[in-house]
Length: 630
Ligand code: WT7
Image 1 (cartoon, rainbow, N blue to C red):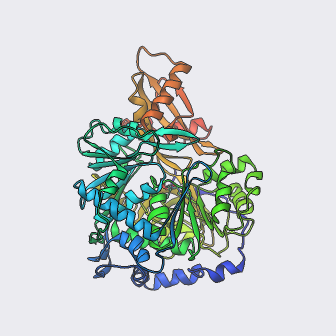
Image 2: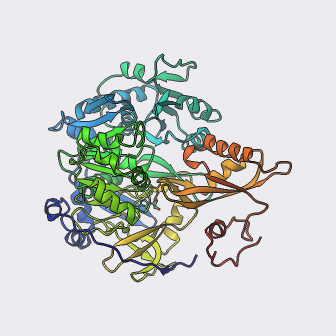
Image 3: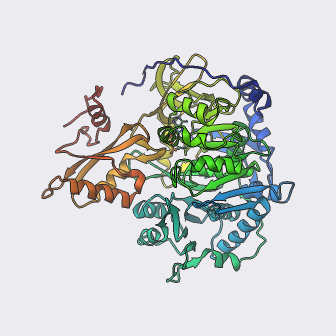
């Protein structure tokens, strides 16, 4: 791929009602961005000053490329901000969490005071099992309030959580447990999905084989009759809670202590454990929840992600709770029992801020306008998008049908690695379909060529961040070299790995990944993990996977497979391989197409050239293939 190329930029501009800008917490972009540029440290210190610290910082930031420290020597506990600050103050009876189960009427509501108490109890339960500061805890749960309680309980005592999305299979879970060295796995007997039970505990049983670090498995038992717990290792979630004391002082953490590890796909090798820290991450997620979602006291925020992804960590759990918001979570999927269920939830709970992914928006477009039309969506004030480019058609539908041609659409570009929103269009600012928007105040982003020179408007290039920011990852767990690559690929810039283009106003259009990550239905998949799952099947000698454009999922996985001697291509084998990937990584990684081939295009050094496969697949010129061997 050449580093730069021309892109067409014409678009309709949408101007939100002036009342949005007048009431916006951030104010207009120019003024807020200038305030940041005038004194970046004072800008961040002001935001951090809205939160509670056990001890203030000596310095706002210390930057030794590629290593940053934020709020140097400050002490805090993020749960003191997410819970105590509200539960011991005026928000004590404010609803923190609304949970809606799969069936109508199956609801639970927790106030800040109640959530605070549950978290303290579970934190004590963890302590009782010998979990302490710096210990890793793996959370593999359905989307129920206990999931949030488990996350916060870890943070309360300084344990490092690593949440694994419940859609992952046993081998993906095993790899993450082992890499993180998790001492405890917290799970549930089942999750409910489309009226069916997903047996999470069974997957955990398989995943903890060959995971010697695991001492205990905590099981939230939901189904009746209760699943039996056999071994000494297994303990019941509620039993633990019952036996635990109520008061649990928050552990005093250093701003730079790790808060969690979250795995994201790598282009090569195993998934990367992205490490986020207590102080900077808290400030970044608090700031963006409050100012990008323009959070007001009576808002009901529904981020439809799962806590297993960074979106859930930042905009279901830490950001919103630090800001004292009311958060809605639900175990429902968008199309079961029918495609109207989410819109009825918006109406029933008066959701004001709705945050979802383009893949969901495109799916709703396909179902038709009658489903959202059947519900009253007047409560909505702001609608957001994240995960992949929001194409103009989807933007327009979302804006018109869901937002009644009134709600600002915040298309937020960010990553697991960035921890917080980085680029978007502020509430009240003109919106351009196809463009995420401008860097938010606090973030310095640009589009550059391979040497790091900014490219002019209309010319595509690489998206980079030029200055450190508080919620940036601090390292890749067990692989600091990989971390350094983010900052040394292009001269002293953080390379996001995305292609992008700017227009004359500085609005940025994100075009997609530059490398070998495939984004399927908003889930970030590494080609390496899918390929290694395929190769682990007895019939497969070698495999390469690419992302192919898909009208709903954004991209779909296509696999090219070379069979071992003695195996013949067949439809049955395709089905077996698809199932095999499903079992090892999960449904999101299932190839939608498998092609048996005799050879794969490779470089002389033996690296598979996926872009050649991709170019061929899409009937386009593969570009420079001088390094091609076969
Ligand atoms: C990649 C990061 C951040 C939470 C979800 C994904 C793509 C994300 C946008 C957007 C265009 C986007 C990028 C990015 N992406 N948001 N608004 N417009 N692309 O987190 O799994 O770490 O994936 O998602 O390609 O690099 P992630």
